[in-house]
Amino acid sequence: MAKEAENLLESQPRVEEMRALLDLLRAHDPKLVELESGDGAVLVCPTLQGRIFCRIENELMHRLDAAVLAAPSPSEFNNLGGNSLWPAPEGGAYGFNYLPGSNRWLVQKGIGETPAKVVHRSRDRVIVEKQIDLTNRKGIRLEVNYRRVVSVPAGRMPTGFGLAGLTYCTEDTFEPIGSYNAADVLLAPWSLEQFPGAEGVDVFCKVLEPETPINVDFYTEPEGRIVYGTGHFTFLLGGRPGTRSAQKTATSPELIGALDSNRSLLILRHTAPQAGIYFNIADNDQPGGPYSAADLYSVFNGGALNFFELETIGAMRVVGQCVTASTLVSETTILKGRMEKLQRYLAERHGLQL
Image (cartoon, rainbow, N blue to C red; front, side):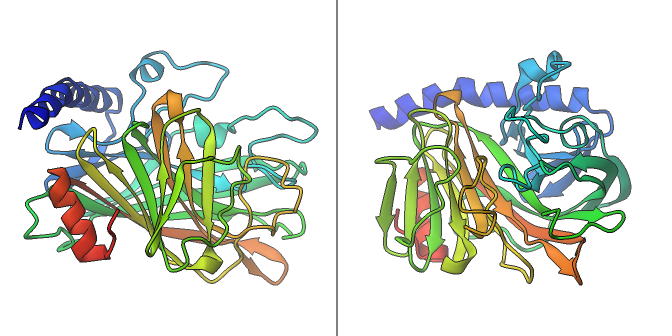
């Protein structure tokens, strides 16, 4: 009981800080739309490029960089946090985070700066859109319609576990405006969901064959931080920043999640494999080529940067030889409560004993 009381006292300043960040977010984006869900709400922020944040009661769940929000850089990428939509791949010959002939990583204006516009709003659904320009590393310039459909499904909250929480769904679409040959352009939607924390956070993937090779092409091998269990593997966050892993569609991963002992949170993300073409989205030169992997889920371990990402990845759609609209459908559930209750929920609902 003494240890439990100590943990409770340590968590209070963190809870108050996340409440203050929620107020800051609301004040910063006057066009913000809140969709009530479970014990909280989903906050869709068109002014912040179409990012999504969540609250349970009055506590912000996602990472929000208050300093960057208050004083954004005029020249560098402003990594604010939340759930953001990016074009895949990141690196390789077709990447969108490098311009032709350059090894300098960047985020293009349409993703990192351009605000979105609310085109539909109802009690349980919001749609935001914007038209953006993208240039890939091969020098091909694309006009693309960016669209996010955010909804809160009814009847998804677990009962009988004594947990607070919410669930929301996204349908993220990139639709090329014009004709672009798949020999010159790879394009798929990629959802990056950021949360604060590192040490004390265990990320996991439910997968039939957990020891099937993981795509660790992104940065460096997360040595000693991946542990294999029955029907899952766990990625222990922390340590040095910049480690990342991805799980291939061929291994049939069912979901990805995080158990945060510091905040007593469980986060689950799910996307189903789609018809289309999956490819390597890694942030490097991809010496094996773009089809050396087929990524469905990915994790970023920020380590000393003290944040992490749970990522879902869509498939590229091709009609004839041309890239066409592709949509990534994802579901996120965030639950808050005592750790033993969160672990019981994982065991009983998902068959996972971490």
